[in-house]
Length: 274
Image 1 (spheres, rainbow, N blue to C red):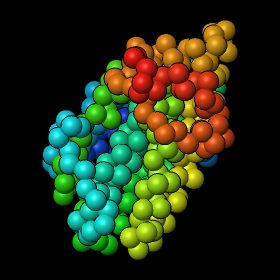
Image 2: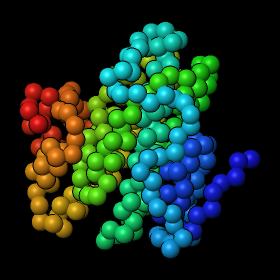
Image 3: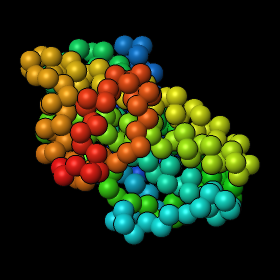
């Protein structure tokens, strides 16, 4: 059995999970920290915590390339179904992004329930990564077999000094994008007879609604504390911190259920110069 790193607080656990290059260790530490934090057997911070790394630990593969160099693949073949690899990569980054919010902003003046929400997100993202990786294994593949793009972590780096900006970009753009694209991808998998992969996406889709809701809740909380309009603040922060336009189509119903109404993003579509 793989030995887990020691940690002395929630922030310390988040740091150790981010640093871990062994993905079994990363996901287990994330989930164990979430369980212990929920049980209130961990403090929030400790003087023994290591510093938050600039980049998360990763195995030697996959090779990371610019997003424009990652080939798109049809879902209609076995090779195409290994496009699940891209989903695994997204879910792995989502684990580290949730942990980074906890670790990097552990000294922010926010209630403990803020960390409750993000550790639940980290727990579920770890679950998603494991589910997708197992499905890859079922198809005779594994995470690391294909190149993957390195754009997701850039969002963390660009917003490392501003919690409100981090919430605007990561849950309210990147996570919300999953609500837009997952239903069509899930339907396509069912059309090709891959009901097992579609079932994995069912779980991810339902959980991601909650993740966007956590982001929207705390984004609105910070805006209210600063006496700022949430939609206008979102648009200002996105223009300053996000590279590229927001791309329709949008799943307005799922987004609104999560607290992200069209007033936030409709004026910032691909046709708008941002």
